[in-house]
Length: 68
Image (cartoon, rainbow, N blue to C red; front, top):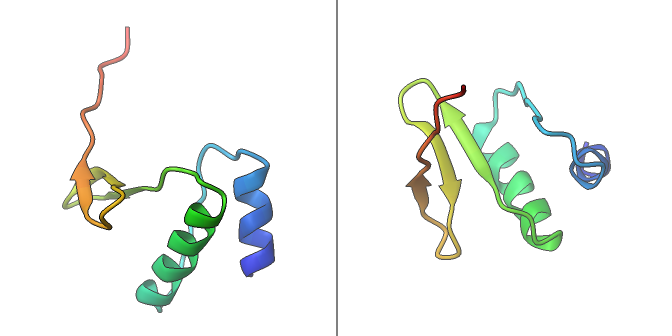
């Protein structure tokens, strides 16, 4: 899965969904790939909304703009 996930990120897929029972492992993998490729990392959840991982490794809320 790591090479497939990396390929998806490199091909600029706008959204990648991962369904897993091991959330911590998946997040570690995604963080490593984002860091390796110097890409921003976003997470969405029903409870927290959209968040971006900052350079210190903490999640920051993202302001969303309403569409026209």
